[in-house]
Length: 108
Image 1: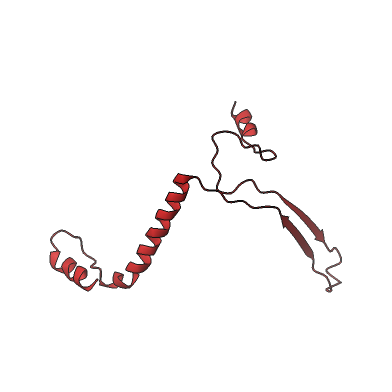
Image 2: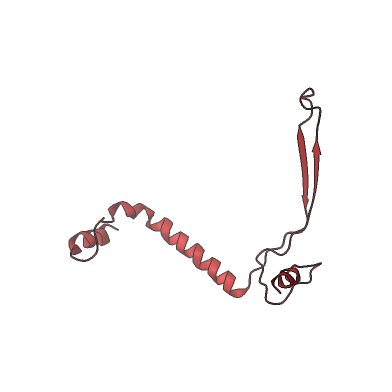
């Protein structure tokens, strides 16, 4: 059953099984690898030449994914705004050290 579920979960030719949410739609690519066997003697060509051609890359977000990414970006923005004030943050617990934490709040 597990093997059949895995096989049925593979996307074929833009047919997406139900219950799947993708950020990146399935990506198809062509690759061509050419190895120069004479590279030990001939330095005019590279030893390995790899040519990769990616087809259309689509990015899609559903509503919960979009809101999650926006919250992440807001959190990163708040961390960068708080970065200059981290040096003032006391290295003591909050309880029984109100004076140090108030000084941090005033300087921050």
